[in-house]
Length: 628
Image (cartoon, rainbow, N blue to C red; front, side):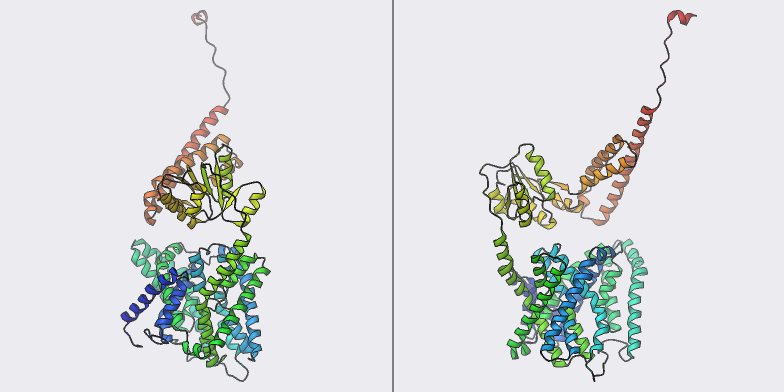
């Protein structure tokens, strides 16, 4: 079934994903493994429903293109500077360490040192698509493991560009390097220097066009206020850059990444992310299916033990290198190990680089096909390895390190506090100072160990679990104070707690104004933006430093608080409508500033009158004096 119509192939892909992914999720295997197994099933080596591996992978490569574009949108100069140690320090250490270990193992198998070095550099790459998808599903994308993984993956993506120039130089002695066969490249027949000039020119076009042409285009389209046209223009930009890169013989994914970097500081960055995000999930699922379909089961079946041993060896070496790099940069043991396990597989760029070095005659066809199978199997094995690591290592460590369980007081608490960090402690001390009965919950082992040394009776557990809240006395309590610093978990906890305990008043810590609006969708919820009062107080102190009186500074802060609370409630109905919300916010800001200026002018005039010298009152004349 190698020549099926497009609609039939689309139906096969969608059916495979719709059937396999929910089953895999129900079994606790994750969506990535579901996609991979679906690909193996419908691929050319089993049911053969979707054509040859090359056709399948070419059909889905756009998923990686969009992923790299979205990653590029996150690469702002401020982010690069903030994560410079993680990206250029930890990332470089992982790449060099992994390449050295894999190259050493390749030398032990008797390969030429040039071939070994090429293999080491190619297999040092990890799968951006699989790692980020898995971390997002586990809620670890914003934590230390997610930050370290993202930094390393970003460095790998950046390193691919110089690897295209370096790898052809590693062709074994006596072998004439050849330009790789880039399908669709206009400049393939030209000499190498001409191809390089064409590629540099294409990169310059992307950078200059993204900087000076794309932004005016997006402004023009945004002025039309047609969301679907803006989405189409965003996709057009991605497809156009990818096509240009492919035309000059470069990776379309790298071109999309470069385009994202160029637009990272654009005012349309958030809009682009929002519009393209839905396509990313669907196309990445398609990419995972193609990875499964691309596993050469005949080669694996012919050498099952050898393939399994090589995959295990590769993942072990990558875990060792990444863990060593993490500890070198003073990462905690658990974070370093979790990051190493997450990055243990081969990456999607390995397929691109293997095809590249095959054309450049750095590797022979048999070795390239073997390495392709190893990378594909390692990617397919990643969800299983992660699940085994969590069950055998993470869960045991948590059980071993779990703090002592404290008994709950049988009396009904007034307040249940979820999260006893820097935010929750201040609110709790105010409650205790007014003789309210408070139950404290926190799920950070390190935090509990420190806090208990100060005499706090903090209970260990995940407060998002309704059974724990019930045990803590939420059914009898008057108030649930949610003070955890996880935005998504706060939203989930607030909604679940209201459903389980409708009578319970909930006061929740909001990350920002948008998060506050999201929380307010749940009835009986009051929100407090975590930085609002501290920022307002700092502004008041700044006014004092600038010479304003205490009266003027305090009145300015109080008026700002009143107006902000007023407009915060007025803007709630349009919080989900981007354009309406922006316009209303501008009006609210201008109104607040106008009122502040008027009020400050009034107080200044009153203070000037109070400070003016008082004249002696005129003496009242006596009646006799008046007659005179």
